[in-house]
Image 1 (cartoon, rainbow, N blue to C red):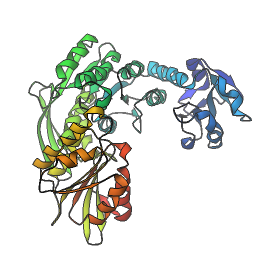
Image 2: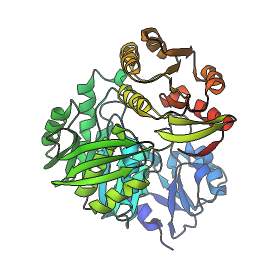
Image 3: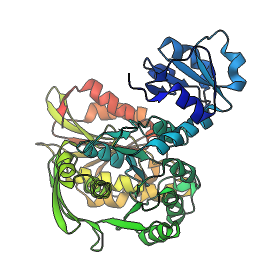
Image 4: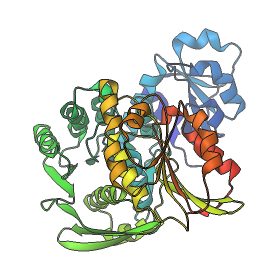
Length: 473
């Protein structure tokens, strides 16, 4: 059997104390007692709301081969007799294991951050690099203080590539994470007004994102969006961090990896990228110019990582938008089909405008409408009234027919909309759901977009439950 870690490696890396009859090794790591696979080690992390030690018994019942627990919590574990590695602090032990995994890795490591597009970019990297080797990645947005070390600790010796998403809500959060990951290549997708309520403005957001450069290994690469207004600030930050290889991507004439042309074709898109002086043609089954711009960063990172650019370009044909991030579904009413674009996972001003542009370019069926179903952008702080009201301009200028809104902050957009468009407003997502279900009709293209915490995902769930999908659009 091939182990992810032998027990001796675990004990050494975490400076732990083994107790009980130990297995030879483990095949996986989990911090969720419900998601244990036989042979996994369960790390009993104490979070903000729950303490993993309270679920240690469930983890054992579900097949955990050993537990990693805190010395201080041993008395509370009662009669659990499973083998354990006892440490002072479980999260710190996971961090130590993550660093050990990085030390032993011989793969090319890529880290991604940015205000918009982190997860989409990570997922594209995962899919296209798989054409050139084995790729380690997080299956979810594990981009915080526990998600990054967990993803690192799961990194096998054999992986050819490792792809890590690194997020932040406040200054100083990226630095410790990227110093664990130590990427060969670091990407900043873009700087935009996300989590704006926690910052003084875009410059401060850029400063926080630029912390990713501090962890790049010697001789590594920084990839920066040349189209972004904070490009020069980020470039100077990379220089200050002593990054020797700084590259740009985007549509800008001076971009090192340049999006030459873009053509949307229904539910797919073609685009052309200049890579080291030659033009590469790419087909992707995820329309939207913003998706193509992130794909340029992916192609650039793949090239810098030594992957076969031709194989990577061909692999984009299998890339589709993820759940909540632009996924398209064709849903059936008794009278005919309509298209649902699910953008319900997250929202900020930049991603809202990109989604509005995507909806405006969508092809409707006979008698159909383009309908924007929009909810609050969270964490905007004092800027919230302005950034919500500002959406009136792109909505008014595009070919969107109906605007259905919910949420306290979307009240500012409702008040700013002065047009002949059909505008519906409700207090929250649940109140808007019945209107959406009752008023959608064949031929429509319906886009649902909001911050995840507003519950707009329930609108998507209700639509799928009432109108069964015929296929992924």
